[in-house]
Image 1 (cartoon, rainbow, N blue to C red):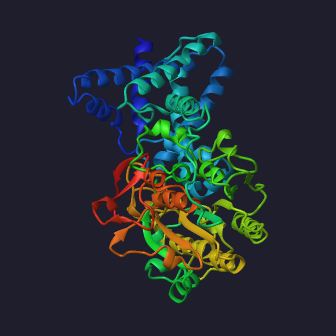
Image 2 (image 1 turned 135 degrees about the horizontal axis):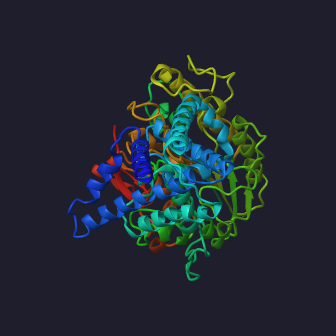
Image 3 (image 1 turned 90 degrees about the vertical axis):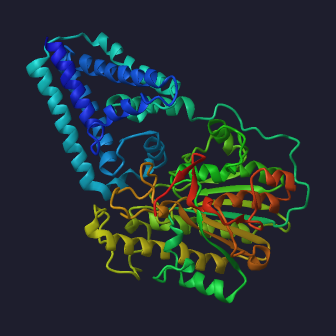
Length: 545
């Protein structure tokens, strides 16, 4: 009877910990899967229920380990896993840790100290996790007295693989629908198996430029966390872009396409999709496209350009944003910075470097340069020089503060970061570069949600509730004759996805190749309800105002 009581207690504990905002999440998931949308509905529900119950086996084995030291070790591992899951839940993601969070964690591994912004949520998550493992300890001490040798630990791994294969075979069952101790290892397994390149990208050797390149130096600047609607050049009430306002009004050097949709609300996906020109017209399945579509670097090299990638976010020699070793083969010069370089200085270091490269290039030399900026990365206070703070009151520390009480301060701090990262950045850039034979495209990977719906403390990469600002970014083009070469039609709307085909056109590729990636900025799109959508893993997703 004791083992039956143990199983029941464990199931209750696992179900209640599954979702802080929805205590009966598992039951709702079973109900959803069993709906008769197709003949397999009931089967899907039964598979999920059976596999979820099977996860108890892992805990049964761990609770029954004969070695007390080994039991404490695994209890600590469980504590870590549930701290991670509870932390994600506390940020407003009801389902807890998922593949999005894993990809984000891989992308932000070098910025783990930024979690101090959420110090209170981290502490709260650790408290909940400690309560969870303490209950497990009580169950072992007072109720469950069966003991196993350490060889049984192999059996404890079985549920992880069962859950992984169940989610792989049944599309409507997600790994995040399981308890943390099972789903996090299973997600790591899925990431390793499915989300890595195993071969070089497809790029037909017959594809070649048909025309002479129109511009010899093409630069992409992909900023971090810049919300288009927070720029005064786009109508924001506070003057966050005084230099750009003047440049737009008094010169021909900048063409402003306004606030456009970002490809995703996650950094890694946006940078990947920009790099491969992912768009709704792609005929490839997403999982294939992400590792098979040729990159803009491949197109540039074939057009005779020397290629550069400066990544201000990545740690020294670290690959991020799904960049692979195969991709690096088409990047002639890939540069990252040592972690000792201060966040607020990282973009300036590379600005000085790539402007010197452009300034000293040989006559008729062709350069294609991509800059991934550190930008207004949270915590915002760390991303700019605090001695220059035009907007007050601002945050005085990067610890905590993601709550309604500090909302005004967080927004002002963010605005200061925007001035530093965007306006002052371009003031320095334009003074150092000749735009007569250079085109600079500027956008951001995604925007920011600063406590807008009061439902999540995460600034971006949300999947449950996505506010408009998360996917609203700027789109500017710089050239001596930008307004002539890239006119903005007020009757059309524009998107990030147009940077790729526009660049192909500048590289000299024919219209048939360009059209595969959608319309260029010279064409735009007709205004329609499509503007309410954005690309997230190449699916249309509704967003909230």
